Length: 253
Ligand code: IPE
Ligand code: IPE
Ligand code: MG
Image (cartoon, rainbow, N blue to C red; front, side, top):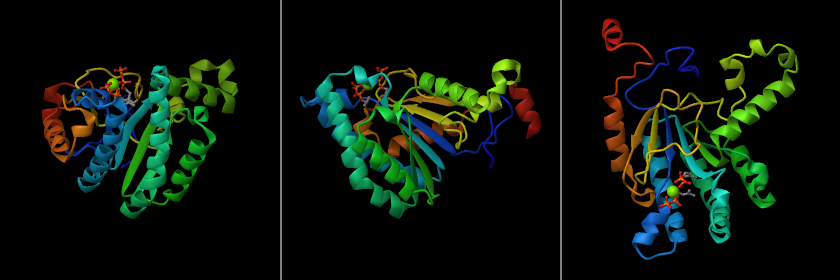
C-alpha cells in the first residue's frame, strides 16, 4: 500500500490499523497511587512498551509510534528529566538486540540534538542496526512536538527549494508533508491515549487530521494486549468517512 494523505486522497484502510500512534500517559499517577516515586512508574512503563510492541507485531500492525518525551516535558523537575534520559539510554542498550530478533525497525523522531552525546550516539546506532528489518516499524517520538515538526519541515523545504520563497503559492500539502519527520509512514489510523486525559498534547498534529481517537482510562504501566484488543474492536466499528456521507460509503459497497 502506498503512503497516502487523508486530505489529498481517501486512504485505503482495513479492520486492523496499519499505523497505531500512542500517547503513553499515566506513569506518574500509577506510581503515586502506590506511594512510589513517579520514576517507578516510568520504569514499569518500559515493560508495557515491550508488551505492546509484541502484541502489535502479532496483530499485523505495520507502524507503531510511541510518544515517550514531549518538547514540553523539559519543564518537569530536573531529577525526573534526568531519570527519563537515563532510562532511555538503558532501554536502548538493553532492548535493541531483542528488537533485532523480532524484525523490528526502530526510528526516533524529534529534536534529538538536545540530548546528551551518548544518547544521540545510541539512537544513531539503533537506527542503523535495525535498518533492514521490516516486520514492524517502531517509531519513538522523543523531544518531539507537532509544532516543532511542522516548523522544521517548513525550514528544510525552503532551504532545499529556495525558489519557493519567491513563489509561496507553489507550496502544496504534498511538498510540505514530504519534510515532516514521519514522511516514511502513512498517517495514523488509530490514536490511543492512556491515562484518561483527552488531549493531543502537541503529538502528531498534522498527521492526526483524520485519525480515529481512542482514550483509555488505564495508566500506561497497566496497559497490555487486552486493552489493545478493546481498542482494535472499537476501531473496527468506526465509519471512516473522510468528509463524505454515510450514504456515499454504502453505495461503494
Ligand atoms: C507519561 O506519564 C510519561 C511521560 C510523559 C514521560 P506521565 O509521567 O505524564 O504520568 P502522569 O500523567 O503524570 O500520571
Ligand atoms: C504527553 O504527556 C507526552 C508523553 C506521554 C510523552 P504529558 O503528561 O506530558 O501531557 P500533559 O502535560 O498532561 O498534556
Ligand atoms: Mg502525563
